[in-house]
Amino acid sequence: MTESRLAAQFAFLNEADKLKSVQRGTTLHDGSRHENSGEHSWHIALYALVMAEHAARPVNIDRVIRMLLIHDLVEIDAGDAPIHGDHDPAEQARREQRAADRLFALLPADQGRELRALWEEFEGAETDDAVFARAIDRVQPVMSNLESGGRSWIDHAVTPEQLDSRVGVKVRRGAPAVWEHLRARIEAWFGRD
Image (cartoon, rainbow, N blue to C red; front, side):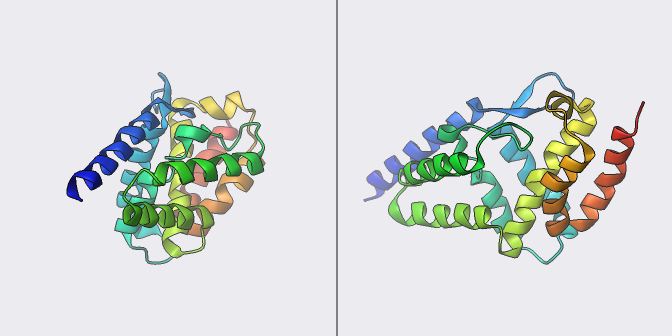
């Protein structure tokens, strides 16, 4: 039993390594290259740890970090769909569900069910933990854009209104003080000449 459990866990972890090969639309803060989804997952877990005190409602930070560490695993199969990119959200959701079916099935059944439920909770964004996790998932790319000179905003011709409707709404819901802080910097960036 232990050997088969370990084999399944290592199979999952080996598959998860592929997340490091999924390129995102967001660059590193220095603008030198695009980040990968593995880097993004680590960075937003750190963001959540540091910013938990700003959650709109009390959260269990351990659960939030667990969500953030697994939330993008589906991109191994489904790829990254940038929030400002041109893609069909319904088709992307179908691809992600199929990816979740495959990836979480690699684990021992009890662990697979537990992580799948956590992923589904993140996707549903109804619990306080998931609302905050999704807010933080949106914060890190904003900071990367502010630090890199707006690289992906320029690439996708993002307007302040689009940023507010695609990002601000989610961040305000889970971490309103964080959005208020970012909004001043965003307005300054878009108002520059």
